[in-house]
Image (tube, rainbow, N blue to C red; front, side, top):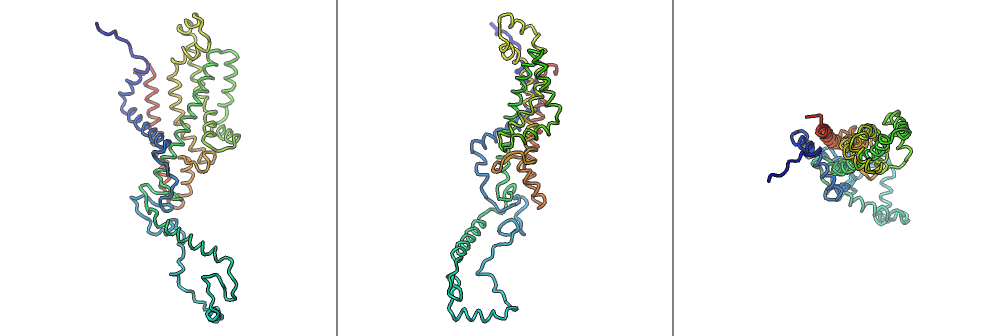
Length: 371
């Protein structure tokens, strides 16, 4: 006896369409690779020591080669003087130089012991000795730092590759969590507004009009100024509380359309509650709209986090993101150090492009009107 044929569901048909789109699958693979890097970074498998000073300051990429004109400190500063190799200055303008030198020789003073020509102990002798010892250790540490790295180093000698991976963790997590918050708020507001209608719908439409009447960047900066505290959670709240308007508008329209369908009337006939009809019966049929909106908002919020960090409203000191890297890079460009800007901008461009292409393909796959 043959197995009865069952028609594939919405998600099965959508996956079938996605598999037939080569660009969508390549984009999905790129996005998946970025997410794996985020998981590896969050778990400590990658970029856990991104703050280690493994190279000299502004170490160039390996394919460029070491900077021959850079000093041992790596940033073009004057190298530390070695007192033993420094030439003795000739004081041709000091008529008493020879007499003072002869006097010191006769009194048998020992400058290294901290005693001057009058036999008075130098109170700074111990500090100067410790300072010389510390400078010697610093020279040894600098000598062991790499002159080049695969993609260069920043001002503090941090590896750009590890810094980009760690910055991607912050930017992608902010984009995902903020998009999830915005979609949840937009879905709840849109479901309540579209299902109940009347005064409830008028209230949410008034609330929606307030948010959409203000330019988005001004709204984001306003919320950032009100919170007055930097941090990943703050950025998530800023973006999530200002980005729910798009999902709200679409979900509200879907609920207005679906609440008059036969399956909702049947659920009402058997005594289902309003909340059960809203989220157990209607929402599964409009969930693809929320999913597409979330994927769109992830891209927008990653770019918004970069803008906020670039303007100084983003992550705090000690936390790295692609936005903070671009903020640092604007000063480095004046010195001709372009590798941090290139790494952060390239990583963000690849992820945003792949996510955008996948979002477009997902929207077409979930639209039953598209063959």
